[in-house]
Length: 225
Length: 245
Image 1 (cartoon, one colour):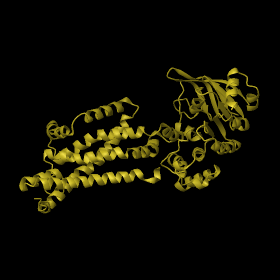
Image 2 (cartoon, one colour):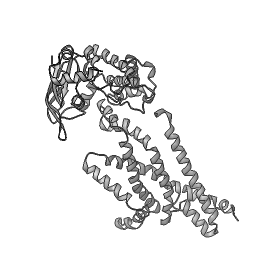
Image 3 (tube, chains in turn cyan, green):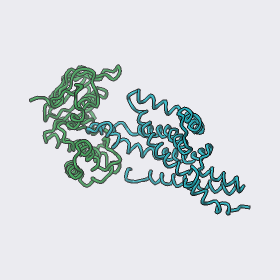
Image 4 (cartoon, chains in turn green, brown):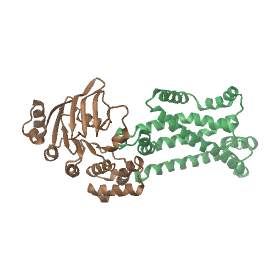
């Protein structure tokens, strides 16, 4: 029999601690996902633009960065940050720091590729027209290329953000109490896997579905036909 | 009077392809020069060198008294003095017609928004589409887009205007509205270099026609002479092809 009571009894722990990250444990799905998306995208812009640079000393490291982090599993990057880096630095890093750093570094490689493709999707004539008007390379990028590139990027960007959002559940392997880990903790006590894992599936789904709805709205914005 | 644009022994290669061969040419202030020739003859490349969209490998180009091939050349200063209009318009699709025109004055010259807008509206009036200020390029016809592009270039108050096949991408019924704007501009005393196949425009408006082939200037003459009695075989051939239809 389904027992919705298990959700009601543990609602505060699951949502406030597990989902939002307010509580006595280091944790929170949103507390990890939001800064990871913001910082990962910011670093991704840097990586993506560096990959398009003319100067080899900027471009080559960016290419190596992308190829390295796209070629290894995310779990492995989390383990590196958890076991290896603290030893090298002789400095303990708390779960939150480990998880956030791993996500930002890993996702920046993917965001970087999306940014690169987006910038390259803007026709060359746009840059030429901007430069011919006297705009510097940086200003042409900022006012002419990036606004158009961002728009072209929206679909793949949102897909990647959804992937990242769901992947935050991997942080539970180092003991970070996100929504998945919180459900696991409750389940260890209550043994109600069906109710608990169904509940968190619904929470994840509502979040990702609203993200894709928002993206569709952005894509359809009429002003920039 | 000193030339507005001067090419001195200019050579340019794209890889192994020699696209400009020893070009020496002067354009006087206020002069309208039409550059014609078969495709691949180097005419577009020639005018793209004037605002340094293309760099040359040898020779010198002097624009308004400054050598633009010297390493100390001020690129921004050059490009604010030389406006350019492209075959494919290249309007910024995420900005309205008005914003397209206001961008460079605001971001390059730091003009206040009100001033930039006033100038932009005056320019739209000048090119005959004051009612399209709020339209995005996607909602403008080709002819209207090209007129906005001309207004956008004029917003920087250039002393020279370059036109790279400005009507080649237009439907026939829209060509004239663009040529009219260009004719007015020529009458106002603007120095112009125009790459075009519109020989009617060349005949009516140009002071001089330059015929290029294989990266070389084959012939230059006033339009009457050029069309009535072209000197070289290649220009005769070219004219017979282009004027027969």
